[in-house]
Amino acid sequence: MTVSALPAPWMLRGLNARDVDSLLHVQTICYGDEFLESREVFAQRLTAPHHCSVGVVHASDHTLKAYLAAYWSNLGKITPLDGHFTVPTANDPVLYLHDMSVLPELAGQGVARYLVQHLMHHARQRGLRQAALVSVQGSQTYWERQGFSVSPVLDAQQSMHLETYGDGALYMTAAL
Image (tube, rainbow, N blue to C red; front, side, top):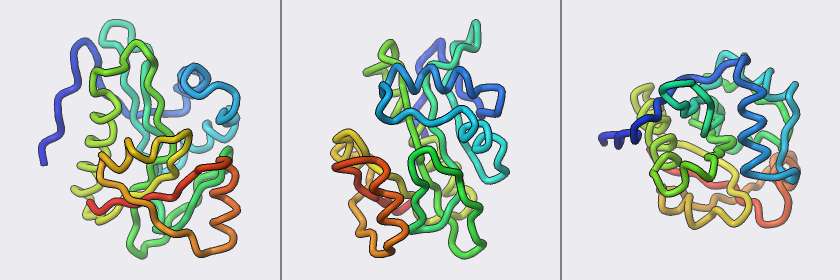
């Protein structure tokens, strides 16, 4: 599968701990206070060796305009809202798409789809066979269009993690 092109003047780059303030700014605009995560947690996430988070920046000033916070995980493991990413075991890792935010000025330009396609392509190249995420704020239909479907959460601890996202949160998986 070919990944679609990112529209000019935007470019993709990996995220790191220096991006935390910009990432939190984008997150605040996109989600409001309900889904904000702490600076400390995001700083820890972006230094974790198993993260694969990417951002879209403007080519001229490198201002972060969109991001997809993601990492390698295990199937059925749900990171609670404002919780730390856990290190995956070697057994059958998956791509976990934790958080995606795209500023309104980029809406309708295919940026979100590009971010998802890019990381799913990268995961396939690493030999991963599945991706997972938590759908929030009524985004189930969007994620279904990206190939995800609702998966049951049978583990009590993971159910408690899912509940941190509020009513309507769904655990979803997709074959890569």
